[in-house]
Image 1 (spheres, rainbow, N blue to C red):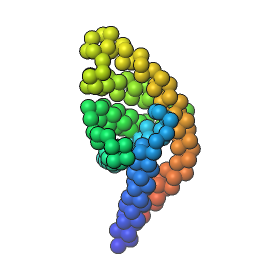
Image 2: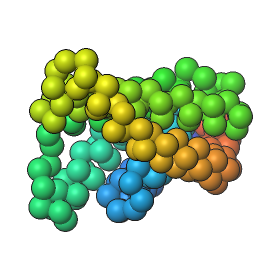
Image 3: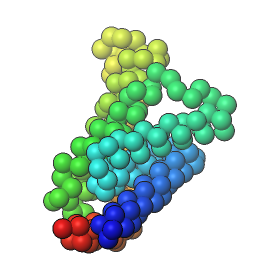
Image 4: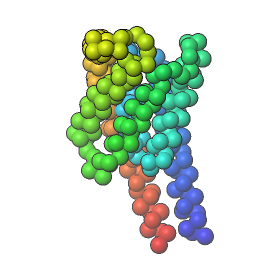
Length: 191
């Protein structure tokens, strides 16, 4: 009886945590701001650090899809396009890759990871633009032009991701500890 109560308490806290992250992620992605300065990529890293692989996968995909629906409705544009695969897999790759280091994560490593995940996301999504948008020729000059014109977006993305990773890393640290403490209590009471 006590085990079932503690299990339900933990599961409900995890569900509430996931719900909060999901709403915040949709908000971060859907609210317009300065180009490529968004809390969403950094929030994907935090989601990867705090939740299981399946929960991370579902939260990132649902928040990206729902925010795309909102953006399409608000701006009367397409919901999804040729860019969607590259954008979603870029966010997912970063959120799942950071999980490998969650046991040894500290702020310095998180900021370093944020820098390299921004660079990787930029390389991957611009490959998608070059391959699928029809804006650039599929020769080497079109490839270089695509990446050259995207350099300002890389700069904004790097600055934004480093800033938001620092802010969210500091802000969510106690929240993460609360979830971990409750999980340890759950495990101690279940044995």
